[in-house]
Image (cartoon, rainbow, N blue to C red):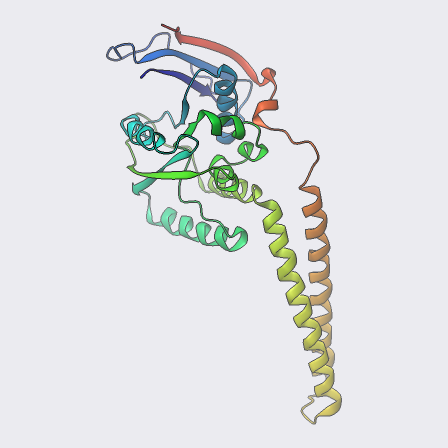
Length: 289
């Protein structure tokens, strides 16, 4: 079994390595090529360009997506490959069996997963580290959601997903640049993949609340004119509050409808349609053997 490596440089100014350091791989690695992107596009679009490149070559049975900082361990790749034999058309994802994040991150991540499930009805408990079969790759590079969030695109697609427990590796060097704003944007990117479902649920929720506000208005009017429970001014204040609430819900409902319609373009940008101009240059570290 041999592999070709495609390393995506997402706008870094650091000089690329001229040769492959380390022990001889015994011919297991056929080639290593560095793609230098024209500018910093973010991790998800960088991955999408890497998948596009792999799909254009079309010479692999499967593609592995992983970070190059050491936190995704290369020794876990055989575990992913082992499952591919039983599911040749599936996507094999790595689940973190052991996590080592700070308490604050753990709490915020748990809150994010709960909010994500409420808004979309889906669960995402894995990251980018995954193995994609050749057939699944052909479908994914023609899926626009991959540009926003790879893991969410997996869940949204009809492709079969298998999982393998893995541990987090130790970074080779440096510290992660991921901060709270970046994590929030990453979470929003995942939700954007399910924008139509999110807006549909928002529309249903607003419709239900609007209906309850109308019922509340009827109850307030009935209590005002049919009972002796009225307190001076209370009915006016209650009707004013319910009227404002109803108008706000109506605006949210109309916004949800328009956003839902706008999220269904006739032609979408996909990894397969990305321009070659987004790649500023290619650097061969090891040629094909």
